[in-house]
Amino acid sequence: MEININISSKIENLREVEKIIDKLSAEYKFGDEVYGNILIASLEAVNNAISHGNKLDPGKNVEVKFQIEKNKLIVTTKDQGKGFDYNNVPDPTAPENIENVDGRGIFLMKQLSDGLEFYEDGRISEMRFNI
Image 1 (cartoon, rainbow, N blue to C red):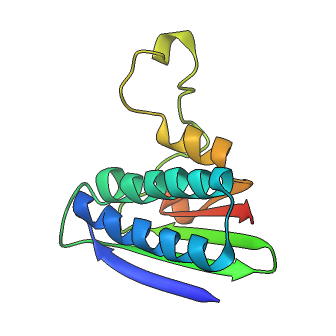
Image 2: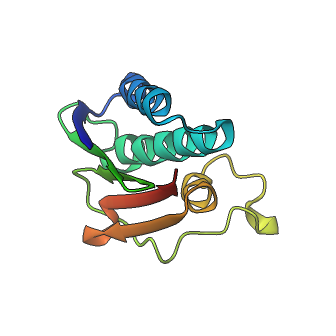
């Protein structure tokens, strides 16, 4: 099973992602913890793509793909930005970063998913969740 959406880079389009996750949760009966992990991590990924990748440019799109394979949900997000050095992201739990407002998205994505990979210089993120 696969669902693909293509949204313009507007924060209000995060609702479209949430609707799909709600639909999948109802159909596949995610537990509360799994649902919460998928929702938060996916919204972080798409928000990062909209805000940091596409710089809130409504002329640029974010592609989001939800795939269910066996007992796994794979969420892939692709933006049209320049990419970033995903191997050199500051640790938000380090004392010097604790009070920073930004910088927690990738940390949350790593912590809440069962696997996170980046491709195409960081323009594509792929998260895996055991469902």
